[in-house]
Image (tube, one colour):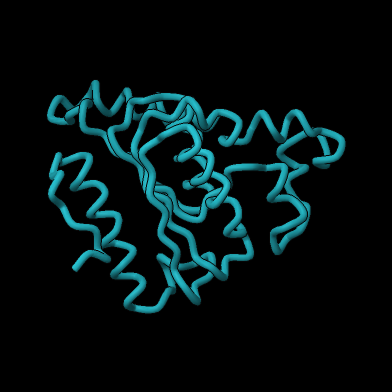
Length: 181
């Protein structure tokens, strides 16, 4: 339902604000917002670019590997072992072949809330299906990178996001990635 609510909000904002260019929408989010970003791009091509940060892509593998171990049963009808299909159906990874939106993935290597393997799975599946995707890892950072990370990483995080949106929303094909000389 969150996806439907967000998309209804976007549609209402576009309708009420004629200055919004619906052909140049971007989507981004971290943690649950990252999960929702993955869900959005795997269910609609309404965004021209996406940036997902510290995001769940596979509810089956995240349970049992994160710092909270198991813990999503309140969102489903039970534990992953008993509600496997629900967990898989709620996983953006199931729908990865539908992605048309170029997506930048950013993750911290010490994130135990959403283990790095979540975005590695997402990235590898996107590449398997020939999708436009890049992945950036931040060393020594945890789940709170964009709030409490090292100053350089906070700046680099914004630089990567700005580069991606410049490239795909602004059409600046010559935009240089932050790690380019």
